[in-house]
Structures are given as structure tokens and as C-alpha cells.
Image 1 (spheres, helix red, strand yellow):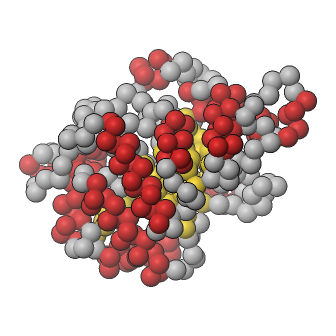
Image 2 (tube, rainbow, N blue to C red):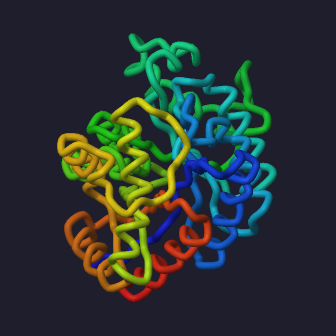
Length: 332
């Protein structure tokens, strides 16, 4: 089996019994714990207008996490680039890299990270996204380059900073783009499993080596919930199920505690929809997780597994990441 790194995707999940201040402190505590466990990176995702997710001001939260840790890489998974000016993002991440050298990642995506009405409030123009997103990546590369010192528009901080750019995707469009630009590619298998296999094939078959990334680099983001027993893990997973059920119902309330019986909450059609979206979820005891991860890696041969864990109780969430570290250590 191909060796692989493991990392964390955090959405700063807001729980029903937590304030946002407490949510941010939980994210920091999680980052400190996974740093001790030698996770490779800790990424935060930009979302808007969702009462269950507090990572909307992504670059600000990255600074908070990086300042409270020592060595783990911290970054965006991702910044939704068409929501922003390329120059502003270059300056923000240039500032972060200057504060925390060799620890900052910039993952970028083209989706709004929200609903259509909020996307309008963010100033997006849906008619230009497909050409705007690739152009903005090129703009970021230009702003980060030393050669841009002769330009009339410069990113300071940012210029000359060694900030790796990762292309995020949940369909095949960004796979083509990442391959064309010679950049690492991260796929959102945790909520968009349908196209992951095809997107990986496109990326690997069409990859054009770049100076910074002579080889392709694949990251698969998946849901992960580990516990001492399969039964305990399945119960913890009901928080994740309820979160996706709320998306189907367009109900953006904070995350709910686990329940004994999901069938009392969702319809058969809703259940099928949720389970289809959560196809790439690793749930269970250490032995069960070992089997699931080995099967996944035998099929996809990724360079990195990025785990997002929607567990209600913070201590159980921290323990889950510890279990995943132990499981992966036993496999590689």
C-alpha cells in the first residue's frame, strides 16, 4: 500500500450548547492535539450564512490557530477565491506566511461556500466564475513571485513568499485546472463523492509538472469518526447525519448531539440522500477503520488523507483523531 500523510479539515463547527468563542477555542485545542500526533496540516474551510459553521473569516482563524501551535502547517481548505480580490488574498496570506514562516498553505476553490443569495451579497458574478477562477490563481502566483517587484501593483506582504497553492474541487472542472497548472489537488470526498474517482483519473493522466510540484499530489478529504467500538462510533455519527439532513431541509441550525435512532428523524428518501453523500466516511473501531482505510487507499493511492470529523463532544472528537493516527501508523 502506498504510504500517505494524514491531516485535518476543520469547519469550526458550532454546537447547540457552545458559543462561537468556545467553538474557536475547541478548534485551537484540536489543532494542538493533532500537532502532538504529527498530523501534517490543519485546514479551515470558508463557509457563509451557516449557523453551524464559524470559519467564514478563514484567514483570521488561520492566524489564530497558527499562533497557538508550533509546527503544524495551517491553511485554507479552502478560500473560495471568486469571493475575494486576488490582491487581498495575496496580502492576507503573505502576512500569515511572514508571521509563521514555512507553515502556511493556500487552498483555493471556485464554489461560493454558501447559498445563491449570500453569494450575491459576496459580490460574485456567476457568469464569469469559470474564467475568473483560473485567472485569479495566475494572479496569486504573480503576486507571490519575486519578479513582481517590477510591477505597478505589488502584494506587500506576499511578494517573494513561498506559499504553496492547492486547487480544491468537488467535480471534474478543478481536476483539469490543477493538472494544467501543475498544482496539488484536493477533492471534497466528504460531501461530493460521486465524481472523486473520475476527477483523480483526469488529474493524474493530464498532470503537467511545474517547477514547485514536479509530481502530482492528491489529497482526499473524507469524513472520519473513530471510537473504541463500532456501536459507539455509529452513534457518534448521528451528529453528522443530522447535519447533512439539515442541509437537505435547508435548516442551518447548529450541530445536534447524537441520537439513538435516526429513523425516527429522517424519511427513507432523506436517509438515502444523506448516505449517498457520505459514501466516503470512515466510521468504527480501530480494526474496522483499518479495513476501511486500507480498502480506500488500495483503490485511490492518495498522497494524503484529510479527515473531517463531525463529533458533538469535543473530547470524543479529539479521541477520534488519536485513534485515526494510531490506525494509520499501523498501516504505513
